[in-house]
Length: 390
Ligand SMILES: Cc1ncc(COP(=O)(O)O)c(C=O)c1O
Picture 1: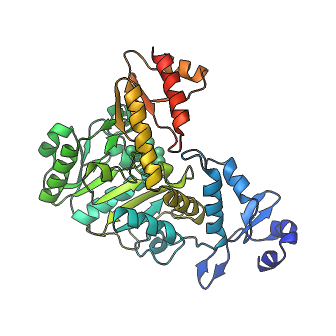
Picture 2: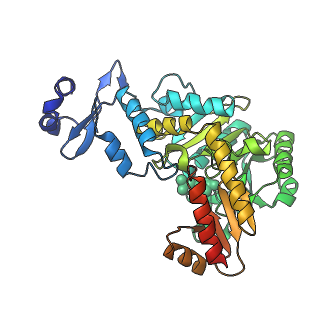
Picture 3: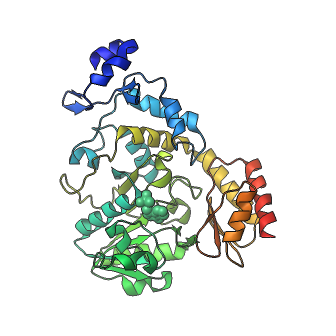
């Protein structure tokens, strides 16, 4: 490997016989990427990597592949570490590993937090459930009817959609479901966590009111429970602030992120605010690939990219869509348009005109464009949508 670093011209042949494991340096695992004829492998210099990253999903959420790719490249070439053990993966110390830049970035955004990195939103929810039980000593979870928190057994257990749950029951005991109006009836001394999406995404794009969130905060405090926001869909700028809670005025004890955090590469995160109990100790939780340098480098770039200008742009586009289209609801660029009949023909008609739109229920169109959509593109989309809705 060292020879390959000094003689990049010969890497291609040499690397075919090199071990697949990253080598260790001072007891830490370092990754250096090299190219082989089978693709990108561990090496110190990787001039071809941006092309590879562009070919993956990096432009999906924000449409800025060059920026993300080159930042990711910086990350690789600085020799980041693979977190292979539990205390590395947990990142609760933060200062010892490859995710440092991103951890710092996210911690700062949250206002002081510890972070655990995994590979998906559902895994982040699993981590949150375990953390909540250990942090409180309580066993129950209160979630909302219509909520969606993922498809692993734990995450499914707190998902308030019978159609997604029934075939897999019995699920985790201790999950109860409330409506925003009946929260107080369901939270009690056994509640470990109140788990809320600030805007219910899969459930139909239903924003929770600031009053509901404030009530949840008060109930959690009164009963010694923790308040966890699932920001897998609402976070990372989607709602016009880095975290949706910032626009809603209620800060959770912990929150989960995923989806756009690494711009299409697999990542999930649990952030636990510094005012909340840490609870996790080495050995409690881990993920082999959680916090790996590739996704963390991409996430660093994303966190750096989402500045106040971009967030203001998201809010402005949101207002533009809401002003031009009938029956809209949502927050930022997580928007729904409620239509009179079934959505399928509208989706098909839009697609025939080159516009891709999602759905969130039989009569609900879901609009989640890239955060970097230009004003001109938004106007184009609006006029196409107006046409197909007429
Ligand atoms: C609010 C919310 N939580 C959790 C998840 C699960 O995320 P993943 O699909 O990455 O496991 C989703 C996925 O859509 C989601 O919208």
